[in-house]
Length: 152
Image (tube, rainbow, N blue to C red; front, side):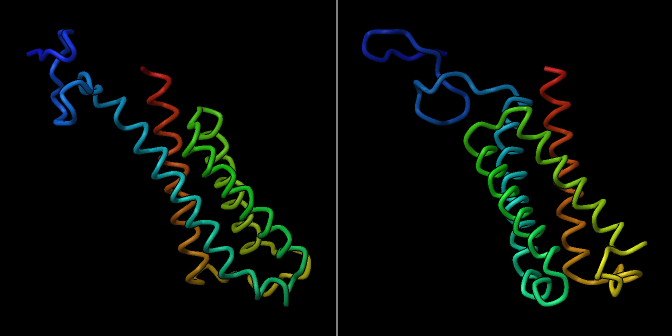
């Protein structure tokens, strides 16, 4: 089905936008912008979780507070890149950051970190669990985006 716009025959879109918007994207193409948004927002949530835990870190272990600040800034920079660019590198960076944070959590809960031995065995701390959930979600969605881009 077509329509005439300024004397030119244009295909009528099936996505119910403006008639001249063109044909709807294939399903796999529509998933990538959604994944960019989902991963970007998840990184923003990850940053917020660590901001909430930051005051306690300054009091307990200042070097971990500095690491948290680095994590927050990095997560927000990657989130912005996902919103603006959304390249494979951005998805890989999001997944890598999340894997590193998960690894840090596991180390902190198993063998501890210098000056932070109180968290050994503290697996059920609510912010920590929420952080793990968000990080795992970022890894999953970023990996799905990378695999989708590889296949298509």
